[in-house]
Length: 558
Image (cartoon, rainbow, N blue to C red):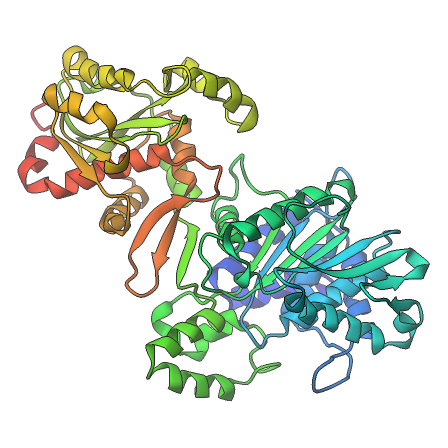
């Protein structure tokens, strides 16, 4: 590995895998992906471009608070800069990554680091007429990163000479480049053509407004050859916002490497502790604080820890800001390899003629998918059979909109077209009736979502099915734990239903840090998890009535 002399990605990977530098699981994963991608030829690596960015930062960018000396990058920072500027798309030769998501604890110099990257993009990147933005919900919130950038400019005579601070921006005449701070305006995207966007302290971005603003910027960068959105954050308290969205996308990418839906342009660096129980140890805190001993001292943390041990509120603050453990965090749940290992077997309903089972139904709230699932236990394995239902008009649109081959799933028999604009629940009812009459398969209990039951439940009760409502909340915690454990142990068979497989990989879990209870949520807003939820409904009634039906479900006499 001769490149290791100048490739800081390799150097850092060697340090964190050997234990010379402590790093959490997410950091180890991203660098494993980067190293394998470079060595395997997935991407090009230009060490000259990587080191050019590093040299600029270390030769032109000064500290702006408490000291004025040049910024000296640590190995973890050099590795990030190398990944951003040195890894290139094989086809185009432009930078591979367009979205960078950096989670690192407070006091680790992330704002100055981000401003230094912004300076490189403004002065050296070579984009004439570039537009660079510091974006935040309010102008005063964008000031921190904007001022850090301006201080870098002012501290260097060469940069200051070609730069002019105007009323609303900083103008670099030689390159016709502007650097501007802006506040949220998700309704207005006209005029945005960003080369670089710095989103600092994203944990404070409010809910839906933050999501829409981020979408505006990601849509706007399409006109540039190699734009960059850099989002920095600690953990926070805002739920269902852009922090959660990027966290779910990031962890899904890191856990699901190799899937056809793998992210291509997202580069996440998640400096987070692994073991919450050891939140107050230096061993764990080094994982969320890569600059520990450089920009922040251990003594500083020791004082904070003393206070946090005596106060639940102080502990929650410490976990959030210094450990990067969000108080209600959403993370990708299942490992791709575990789902893949459980899939691919060929079986049909006929193979389970005469068997007992449990069932679950996830009924569509709007005009989308409905899923019905059987879980059949035999020879120590849990066989899953899931049938999906979709309205015909939605089917026509979804094929093009969702990049999901619903037409193939219909041809394979895993998807039934039902109704025109909404699923006709009579088709779901008929599917269950056919189970009993045609295949002699006997669902002993059927779990369903109480909020979307409709008339189907009553009809099924009248037909003799034992129906039981399942609340889709943290009460599913034991179900999720059991399913994940059994899946990892190889006790599940998912068959050839790739639509179901994708739904399982779309599941994230919201974890309440106070009691570790969790509930299933979507990895992203447009994702579907209906098939997975129907499994959880089935498992919920299986667990609830195990004493009553457990022996029958073993199907030993079947």
